[in-house]
Length: 427
Image (tube, rainbow, N blue to C red; front, top):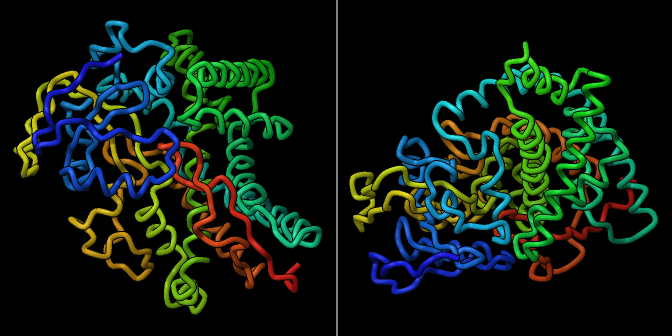
């Protein structure tokens, strides 16, 4: 599957192989940047793509009409059947929703979903998010009384977004554990292809069950709103497959970014006590913590895939190497690499600095595919982070930083676990 590419324009004879386990995402990101603004990489399954790490160039490509997300139209290898379901990332490109739509089709889907996912609906969630946060902190304190070390990712960073997104879409609370297991499987990019296919099959079964329930008993939730768009006047502006894929996109990918944002923000503060002191003193706002975390450790490290609709001369877009991405070639948005680019952030781009003047980032994408759930993720973080550090002012990592293990994925950028010790007096 896939053919050997020509030599990289910067003289690299072979594409850089991406580690599917994501064990060293930021080291790999540095190696990608070292090869130029855009360089060939080899994805799992020996599929080659262009990884774009220059923030300036990536922004231009994300708003360029010559760049598509529809493999059926613009990736010949997929359209001709050379990319088969046994490819480990097949389900990431084969879904039919906003994530893989192009042009008018994308606009149709985004308008439908935007009507359901409104800013007012998001803002109205604040009291409920505060309530969920308080309950989780109480449970965390109880866990801390039972054990000296607790897994903050498992007990706080994960359940908050999954409960919020489940309530937003009307998924019964008792199905939350099942959803968590399915989402973990979907982001496990080093899994066996058969495992990935089985994971999506189980996820679709859960979404179909949710749709059937909401058709029978509609509620004030996004699933009901999307069903209404699907069934509106019998015109089916949203197909049944698009409905299921849209639910999968929002419920799975939507909450995973917030889990990693919370995880990474807590980790960054605990490993940079000087930065935490600035926040606690009031000299720096929690919003600065959130944006700097999104910049320096993008929750989604690299996002597959986009495709060149026509030959794209990157020299005309500012690439000094004058690279040309040929029509039909896939493109990988290297968000983790772009977030630490010295080109934009200077020589200390790798450093977590909440006082940094330029915290602009691409962690939620850019252009027409900018993440609709970004306001919700930021809202959850603005509530959850200060509440955690206020409740447990003595919070500290329970293991050396170098013993933390990353999520088994080159897409999802977080930790498998975040073992911490709580302040006993706060319990």
